[in-house]
Image 1 (tube, rainbow, N blue to C red):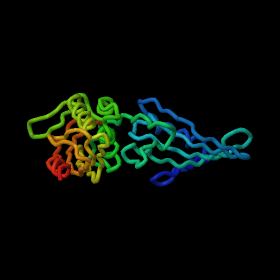
Image 2 (tube, one colour):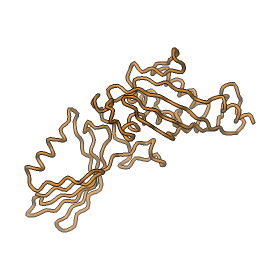
Image 3 (cartoon, rainbow, N blue to C red):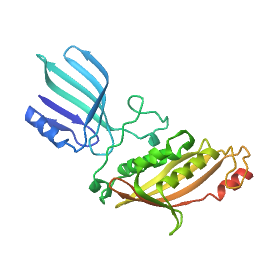
Image 4 (tube, helix red, strand yellow):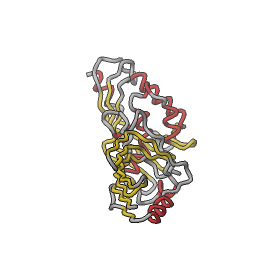
Length: 254
């Protein structure tokens, strides 16, 4: 059997069953791997499948396209293309790449989440759920999203001494969502620094209720935020953040 896997890195090629067995051993994880089949098409000796692999212990799920060739009822050759599943925050449509829902994020080992080699994509994965909670929060289970994104002892600092717990932060998100139903928070720039992540974000929206003492006028605002996150065990441990909220009331009341 020949196995060819093509992803973002160099192709992996195994020309016998022993090679495939080694690949399977490399994919072992303390979590429970899961494969969800999607579309399956067959013609002659060829079968093509599209599915999703999750529970790999490496953060994102994989979206896979597989082609197999059969001989005498057995697998003879296999080709596939693997792609990291994009998060809801990264997709303009907000729709999942596969099926009708997004896969649960795998818990990353601590070494993967805090290593100096943390990539931009890994950093995006770690902060994705928090920013998902900030997008139209009145329509979301904000507490559940933050529970997945951040550690139980998470602290959100607005000054060097003042901070909110994870639950208190959820209440703030809900308050913002009730005043600004179409609140949109995008990641404009992201930089990993060891076990820390720096994010430059942009918030936009049109208040329908009083916001920071200013009554709604039908006008929208656009403002910037800077966040410095610290990561522990694959989840957010703390954040120091500065938002330029002073400009929002000025823009609304003009």
